Length: 83
Image (tube, rainbow, N blue to C red; front, side, top):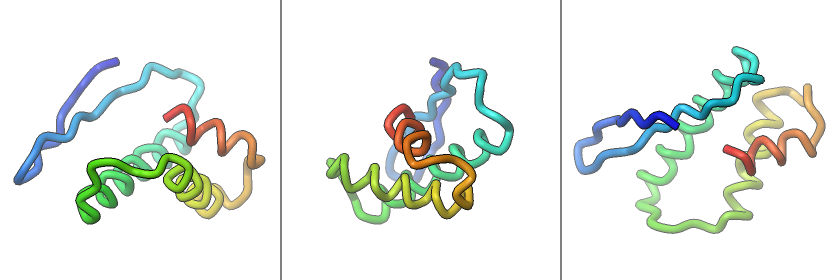
């Protein structure tokens, strides 16, 4: 994995480029949007740890809304778990 960084006022947020070539351009865009949303959530909630199941449910809900049910639940769950 390559590691880039986004500079924030108070900290440094790592950004990883996952080497998975099977994602479509739409999927890559959605995953980038999801990553940004999760970072915003963590910063706004000042989260140092989180409930993995709760976050996974939020990710699945986001994917359901964003993808408009184009993929089945199992695919979205696997996608959420393998980020």
